Each structure stands twice: as C-alpha cells, then as structure tokens.
Image (spheres, rainbow, N blue to C red):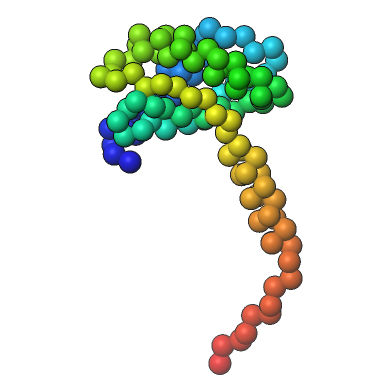
Length: 119
C-alpha cells in the first residue's frame, strides 16, 4: 500500500472510532475499530470491527444498516475528494491470535531431539 493510503486508513479508523464511541450505545458490549482498509481509488472502505461481550452479529448488522449516517458524520471531519462507502466486517484476528499462541504452547511442550556434541 502507498503511504497516502496508510494515512487515510489510520485517519478513518480514528474518526470512525470516535463516532461509534460518541453516538452509539452498545448495551454492555465493547465495540472497537481494529482496522480500516480503503481501496486505491478511495471509493470503498472495509471497516473491521471487534466486539467483546457478545451480540457480534447484531452489532455488525446495525452498523451496516446505519453506514450512511456514520459515513456522513465521519466525512464532516475528514475531507476527501471521494467519500468512501463504509462496509463493516467482523474482525476475528484476536481469536486467530489466541489460537496461534495456544498452538505455539503445544509445540513448546513436544519432546525435542537431543543436541549433538561438537568434536
């Protein structure tokens, strides 16, 4: 990715997080914006959402249903030539990370071959 795209991703991530924190109530769930990936032409943006405390499907469907209003609030603060259409997706990177750590722990418990002595 280009440096400009990376900066736009980070800016959108920060602004979307602010909108979700200020303007939405989540009934006991913690909703975080883990990453944003903008297409090269800046017309589409995938927003990866992490949900702690259950109701992940409800949160994602609510966000996708209200993407227009969220997009409008974000674009009042972020001025771009093209306003990217926001699409909210579930982010399972935390679960994958935990699975990898568990696999590494299992590998560490496996017996190892004895080291050969040098002559």
